[in-house]
Image (tube, rainbow, N blue to C red; front, top):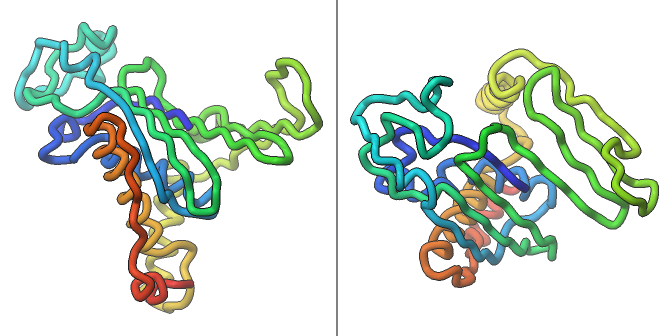
Length: 229
């Protein structure tokens, strides 16, 4: 999975965020776990601060990076955070507990901004194109091997929804309020959130220790049982 994105001022300082694999990537690792039906048990990662650390124009409290006249090209940006010590390019390899293998990449200086997921299994491949309301589709290739085929065998439009994050904010709050009022099973659990954060943290530690593989410990059986749904 590849995710191009831009950082915010507070994200630039690892004292505030540990790293962007955690601050930004935990959301994507959570999605990977959900799609694969398992958690990450082993990670190795590499990355670098290859671009934004070379930008010399730093202005405390000034955020001009999203001004179209000033935010391109990346090395020509102005008003960046005085402290930038998190990686702007990261790559992670993961082995999930059920045997699924996954990769995750972040690039913070790409010109476009969207999440891209590709899933390859025994019955074919699927990939999303775009992640914005009204313009996103999921393409599926499942009719046998062939040469390059940009269209695929099936195209599914992502439904439009009102509200932030393509309607997800409303759905999230609706689920939370229902649980608070009525109780019962939920679609996910704090353990899933913790597993995504743990994978992101250990990936960051691997990145900063020569890509040494790191085991991602699970929660205790007692905690897992408490939050079981």
